[in-house]
Structure formats: structure tokens, C-alpha cells
Image 1: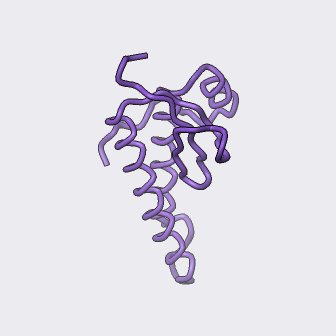
Image 2 (image 1 turned 120 degrees about the horizontal axis):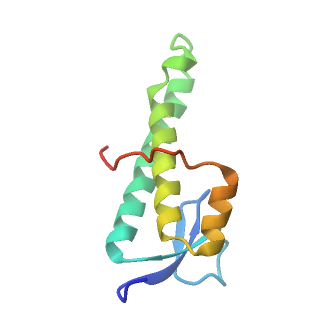
Image 3 (image 1 turned 90 degrees about the horizontal axis):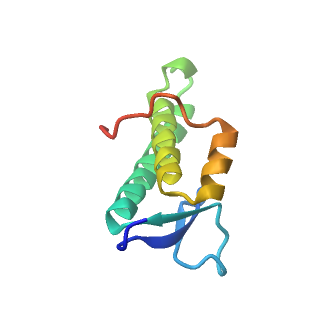
Length: 112
């Protein structure tokens, strides 16, 4: 990978990004540029916003679940997160993500 890339450890459930894999839990290991990390952090922020919106929607009983746009946004953003982690991941990360089947055949565009 490029010279300006650094190794990062990502814990997807907590959205934690670390430069050292020994002192915090991590799920995926990636090599990323600063621009890649900015994009990943933006995805994490969008995911958090969609999660909060879904929480509020869940407390409104007259809105049917299949009209749950915040949940759809959360799912779409999570797809983007997995695509980016796959793109930047080491071979073990890529193999794991492939084994889950979480990546769709037609990746989601970066247009939010």
C-alpha cells in the first residue's frame, strides 16, 4: 500500500479507531491514509446519527416498521463502512468480510 498509509485497528461495535492493537479491542486491521480515516470517521458519525433517529422512531407506535427511513439509512451507511474497511483491510480482514456475505455485488455509491 502507499507510503502515506498507516496501520489502524478498528472496533466496529464501538466505532473505536486505534493506532495500537495491543491496548484496545479491535475487529479489523486496515492500512489507510488520513483521507481514508476522515471518510471512515464521517461514516461512523452518520451511522450514529441514523442510530439515534431509529431510536426515536422506535418510540412512535403509529409509524410502521417497513416505513423506517432512519433504519434504512443506518443499514446503507453500515454497508459503506464494511465496503471501506474491506477496501483498506489486510488479507485476514478481507477474508472475514467475504465470509460473512455482508458485501453486496453492487457497492453503494459514496453519495449521501
